Every structure is written in structure tokens, then in C-alpha cells.
Image 1 (cartoon, rainbow, N blue to C red):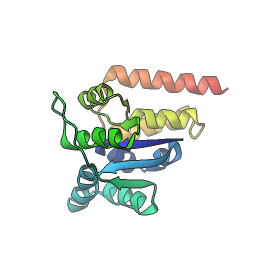
Image 2: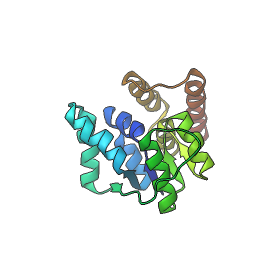
Image 3: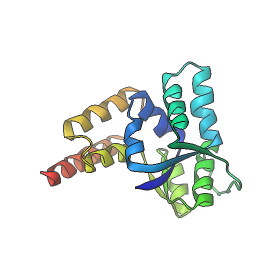
Length: 171
């Protein structure tokens, strides 16, 4: 299993659909920088979002860890502060995998020598690890999208094809 540093968006949408357990099952430890904690938990609770309480529960359970960024990296590309902290924390801690959905931030993570993955990767890993079948995958993907998660059409099709392939390989 892996260690992974997560940005806010994947946590928010996995929490909105009550699927944070999938992340816990595929990563020994998940780290978030303070900016992500502030955005997801502090701000989320302030505006009454249920997902903020679900994320806070994971922190209290000890598998989701808030980690201080000691050295904020700088890049020629402008990315959201939380994403910059995610990338900086991963480099600081020697963690290769970062959970980021924003395309620009994923490119910056790649330039930093990291392996960016997104929310769809989490549910694909659940299929790969036989935690859900194809129908459960589709239902989960649909729930995430109905919660407001944006996925380009071509990525949506690619993710469904990959889930089908993984399911067929298991039969």
C-alpha cells in the first residue's frame, strides 16, 4: 500500500458520496497540508457541509494526517495555494503519489517528479482490488458526478472503459 498526499477536491467528493473508505483501503497513510485542512474541514464546517465532518472523523481516526509544509516550492505556473502545498508536502516527505484533480496542478506535480492521480483513480483502484464490481463502480462514479464533480467526456469514457477492462480481467 502507498502513502499519498491529497488535495481538497478528492476528499470533498469522496466524503460527499461517503466513499472515503476507498481511499483508506488503498493507502496506508494519507497526508494533507494545512491549507487543505482549512479548506475542507474549517471552511466546510463553517458553511455547514456534511463532508467536512466526515473528513474530520478520518483525521480523528488517525489515517488522514495533517502535515506542516516546511518549504513551499515555487513554479512558473500559477496553481491554487492548496495544490501548491500538496505538491510541496509530497516533495518534502518523499511521497511520490499526489491525489489532485485539477489538470494544471497535475501538470505541475508531474514537473516536480510526482505521480499525480485523481478521484477516478481511487474508485478504479477499488475495482482493481475487488472492493467493488462494475455496477458499483458506475453507481459511485454517477454519485460523485451528481455531487458536482466535473469530468471531461473523454475522461469519463476512458475511466468507464478502464473499469470494464479491470472487471473483465478478474473473471
